[in-house]
Image (cartoon, rainbow, N blue to C red; front, side):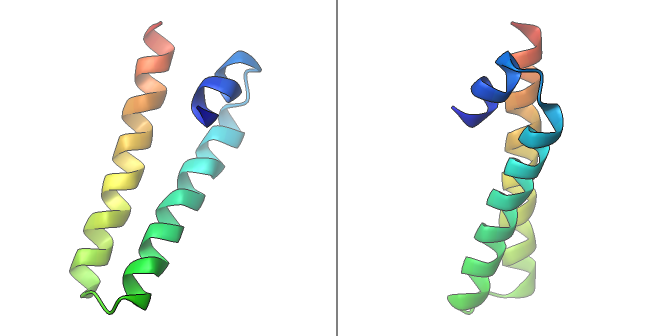
Length: 61
């Protein structure tokens, strides 16, 4: 929903910061739950790649 709202106002930088914020929240949550560094990096990468896919899909529409 955030990506859709930022797309209507041409706020790509805001969308990127929102995706990074989600990624780092997931990363810090992994640290709190004592996951391995590899698992935390995989979770961070998943959040960032998912955000890129959503922005790409929004750009196609």
